[in-house]
Length: 470
Image (cartoon, rainbow, N blue to C red; front, side):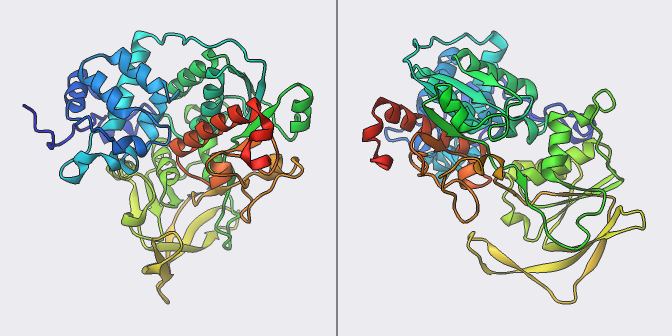
């Protein structure tokens, strides 16, 4: 009998020297035998804590039991009762800090590899052919969803399953939001995103592309077209900068621009595609999150000889997933920790040539709970560099928000919305994801979309009884 406390399987992946030459996916997925054996380790707890750690409320023990029995089609059906994007979640959801962190087996050994198994059954279904779902007839109500990222796709899919006629309005020319413009092909293939979007479409959801709500049309226009409720899931796409001298030099990108050019506009296939990205011999990425890791790993694949990550705390405090940090270092990214840029240095032609930095030490914890980085006087030094990517976060784009009269924002400019219902200050208008919380994870945005869908259903059944607007 297998020891249920024994180690979980390692994810097979392509070797670093091979994978840095292209944008093909790095993790390869579990083989069938390993998936079955791993699922058998589940204790089938009567009060499963793992489910409490899942923002989209998947019946995790239920789908693991089906995997253990080899009933993979039933397992993916069980997941899709709650989650319309399992192939995406199985790849980019930080399960180690959510469902897996709650797993009882993790207290004395290693938790079940829930994320690996979710990816396994999603990929199994894709290989066998995804069956179109049965959807209820139209209940007579129309809902508009603004933004086709993880929050919008989840909200739209859940509403469609309830019988609502839903249209998603997306500003870009491809659906998926951050899933297509922010996450590289080697971590989340665009074919996977397209497959998941097609599944949402198969539920009856319509998607209008290249439609900028706030410019192309307004919420008032949509009301005139018969939409009765709205979900805003536009994400946080306005890049933050360091606001230090020299930041306007050529060769300095925001992570948003760098990754959008690379991922959505396929700069990695230039000149086959028309979008270039200038990559020098030496690239520095400022930041320590998943976006910073993605940018650094893209720079290597685009031809940089040296890539360094400049981060003001230590690796322990990096918000990026541990496995993404490990993969970046395997590929040759050099992490320069306890270091903070103070100015950019350029040449006579206006191109960046270096970063003047100061060394840091960790002081007392700040409001984030992490120890505050404190400059060490007199420790300045220069890093020679040709290209810089600033990946220190992003905020709300005011384009849409400025056109919605009466919509309350918080002090940081995000939409003020109830965390449980997604209700905003305007009756019939709901919001969720990064546009409410600031930059967070794909799965947390999906959870917000799911909660908002339930609230929209309650609201449209009887607006007068919805608690926020009595």
